[in-house]
Amino acid sequence: MRLKNKIAIVTGAASGFGEGIARKFVAEGAQVLIVDRDGDAAQRVATVLGAKAIRADVAVAADVRAMVEAAYDHFGGLNILVNNAGVGHTPQPLEGLDEAEFDRILAVNVKSIYLAAKEAVPRFKLQKRGVILNIASTAGVSPRPRLAWYNASKGWVITATRAMAVELAPFGVRVVALNPVAGETPLLKTFMGEDTPEVRAKFLASIPIGRFSTPEDMGNAACFLCSDEASMITGVAMEVDGGRCI
Image 1 (tube, rainbow, N blue to C red):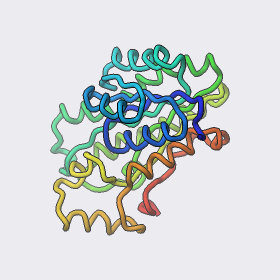
Image 2 (image 1 turned 30 degrees about the vertical axis):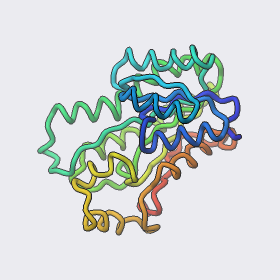
Image 3 (image 1 turned 90 degrees about the vertical axis):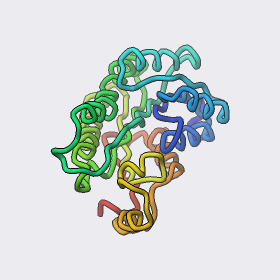
Image 4 (image 1 turned 180 degrees about the horizontal axis):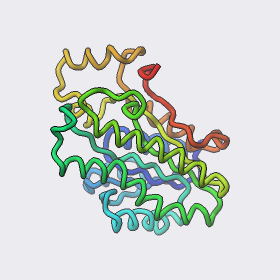
């Protein structure tokens, strides 16, 4: 029960890594608000876990404000904010990506963290505690070709995590990140372009441990970083990648 009496928001929690993090948090005693732009899926996960759910698009300021307010309305506070929601693009030459898709990547992967900080950080400063966990990617450390703008967005997340950590440490607020390698989530096919045995083998060949990240892997790492056991850890982007970035 490492997160007993903790209140957490997890975005993009209706599937994939977000759902894995939410499941682990609930198992470790946290009260969790499941956030996803698919409201029905969010409610299904929340019902199974005994959590609360809210539909929100993390790229929309009003939705993010409502998300944070919902945590206070349902649970009476907030201790942990997990910025997990993200989008990718199919492999392609960097000059070929459509402008609207580029804008969506920046809105979901980058602007959402800014919007969430605008709402949560003032509250964390007042209570002199809090943890923000941003889900970045090995793509921000060791970029794969033909995924340039996704890579760049996750590099931003890593830098933002470090910058936020330095500024918020005096207020008792920790900011950390996770860098997963490609995982068994709905986004996997997007990154690979197509899901075939040949393409999977190519991706797996770059991971020394020889498998993809799982939602359980992410949940375990997130639980540690957001728990009091990690009270001396801030500004790190922990790689959960089976050795991919070595």
